[in-house]
Length: 78
Image (tube, rainbow, N blue to C red; front, top):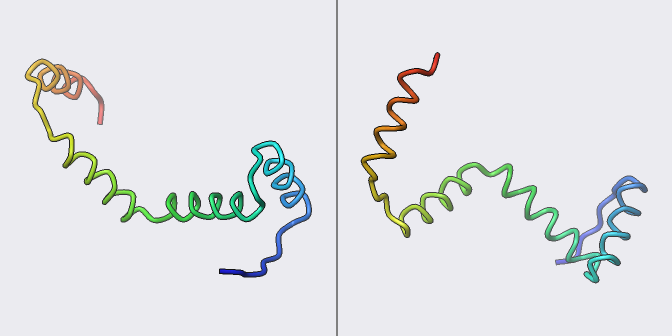
C-alpha cells in the first residue's frame, strides 16, 4: 500500500543513509522500522509469540534449576 507521511528532515536523511548502507529500498527500511515499532507496542502479540515458542520447546523441569531458583528467591528482598 502506498501512503504519504511527514517525518523530520534529519530522520529522513538518516534513513536514507541506512538504506544505502544496507542496500535496501527506502520502503523496506520504513516497513521494517514500523513493523518493529508495532511489535514492541503490541504486548498481546509478543506474549502470544513467546507462548507459541514455549509450547514448541516444552517445559522440561530440571530439579537442580528449580531448587537453585527457589533458593535465590528465598534470599531476595521483595
